[in-house]
Length: 169
Length: 306
Image 1 (cartoon, rainbow over the protein chains, first blue to last red):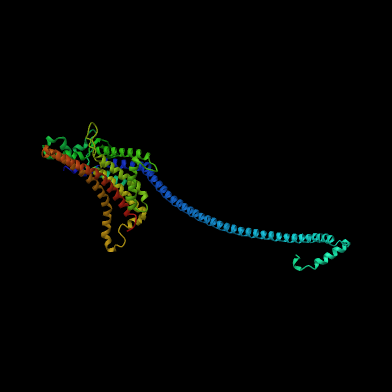
Image 2 (image 1 turned 90 degrees about the vertical axis):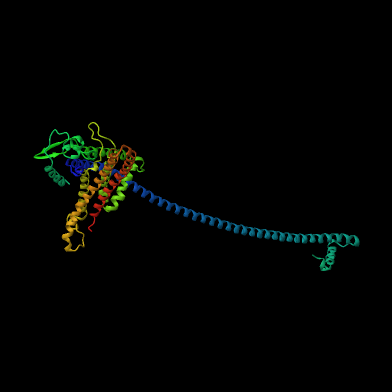
């Protein structure tokens, strides 16, 4: 008897529960759960996008780093190649220079030798001439003959040509 | 839903006495318990009965603002009762809390909004999505509303505010079977609509009996399944109502032990009452969750022909 009232269905209370709950459903659904669920979805999308773009950017960064490493490697190889080529060129130039210098010095030597020979020959010829003149003078004084100049010179020339070959240069 | 209300309207007429227009407390004459509380000496009840009556009076409803009228020849009583007021208090607090929190919603949640959103997210992911599946989004707002409405009624009912002046005092609206029945009827109605939406109107009713049941079992299975339709909301109604009312009665009786036995048990009974009170806070949350969860399960069960 005491608890009987607890299980009675009261129409007024049920009616007001219905009205209140319908109002709550409409108001909360429109102004609370809708915006909140939308916000949650926006956030989920934002996070997914951020992760996606982070992945993309990381891949791009890794690609760029790899590219940079590759180009650095290439540049290094090129520099090494350049150095090697330079060294070769320098060595070649050095060899060439040396060869040319040697040749020039040899040419110079040859020319000098030639000049010397020529000058020696001229000097000898001159010497021979002067010797003839001196001999003539000397012979003239010695002989004191009245041979004319032409005849005396002929005599000396004859004499000189009779001289042994070795003395001639 | 409306049909059920019409049925209720018809049902209440025979056993309710014609209204006394100027009666301040029509309920008083209706229940012995209330009467016992009003006039304990006159009734000559022994002490224990009086206390029990007093306790049950606390968990029972009472009319605060009578509101009767005739619609044609039909008497309609939509008086504002104690539990209506408590329900409105809970709904008001819920609206204020949600309005304050929702205004501060942001992509990076914090503070009160974060807390609210945690619950909404829980209802969406753990309750709605896991039980309903494909069309869960359609039912998430209903489940959120049911969860928060029940939660706030359960928790507001625990506020220890006695009656004063014209205010009838705080009491748990969900501790009244009229309230829980309407809530369960909402779930029932939505479940039927969800089933017919997912399987088609005819498909839903044909698949009431699981496919693969031998033909000779149909006469047995059909009544069982139809009965099953109604036992679900009935279970929801009674579970919530019984859980909420039982905790309060236990608390009141523990306190009443000081009168039953001796004033010296007060420390023990207060300690135990406090413990039950703490438990009630938890039960209030759990029952709101259970109601929402079962609503989602019932809706989910109608989504696929089994």
